[in-house]
Image 1 (tube, one colour):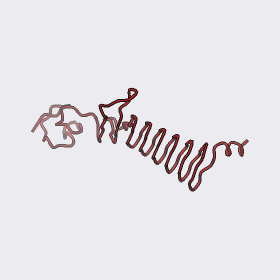
Image 2 (cartoon, helix red, strand yellow):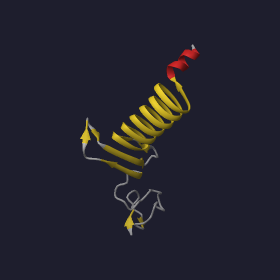
Image 3 (tube, rainbow, N blue to C red):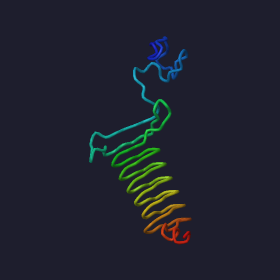
Image 4 (cartoon, rainbow, N blue to C red):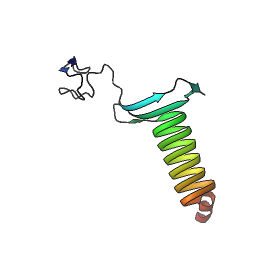
Length: 137
């Protein structure tokens, strides 16, 4: 048994929420959200070489992975693997990238189910951005 970090009510160390105040994981001295996050100590240009984030802050907002290599639900990096991402090279469900493999993408070059591209694209419904602009105007 341990006191809750928020209300100091005595609770089990295995409690997921405090029965008195509702604090999540009340036996932990510090709690900064749900999920998993890893940042490598090695850095390049002020960014971690690798940032993996499948984490949510205590207020429920997701923590985006930002690094040279970013992996997560939301990501931004030179090499990006995510559900929603931005990167030079991106493997993603939804992405804006230089080079992309995605379900939905806007990229210089891409392989996608649906996408807009500038240089070349392959997929089910991919359209050259300049051709699309030409048809609209």
